[in-house]
Image (cartoon, rainbow, N blue to C red; front, side, top):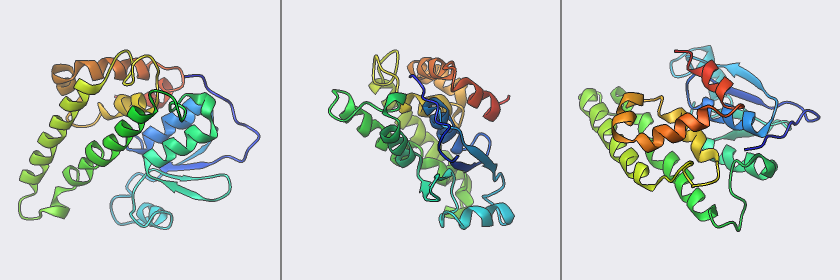
Length: 216
């Protein structure tokens, strides 16, 4: 994925927290060569000033939040991915419209965020949704997530998710195998995704992002 350095424009601002979903957008911006400011709002998921900061930008109190150069607010990682790929097509974040891989790319991008990514809302905060049986909800949702990843393992090609061409899908895989059920499970049950994740994590623009967000 070649990168383009954008320095003449005002800098966008990414609101996020180390190791959270904002890591996805941080990696996308790095691959696109976009310089940006980062505001660490760790603790945004509990009442306090960080949560108030995010609520002022996103009424769902979720990250990532990207404030663009013109002051506009972007949320939802998939929307940000598509927006960046349109602004910086040379970045290789997405196959161009009309290309043979475009349909598969769109399918898998939406699938990841609406199915796999969405499970973290429930498994990370089960007490919000099942206060009487939070442990059962968490375990059930994580089992469901494992089934989703097994399916995606069968869909992914090599050396990248789409085959010969890297895309933002590989960034998602590189980041998300660091979340539950965690890398040892992926090594045992989805080794193809581990290979893709490692390849993406070695990208010169992505490697520093991984190191900052997952120092352990």
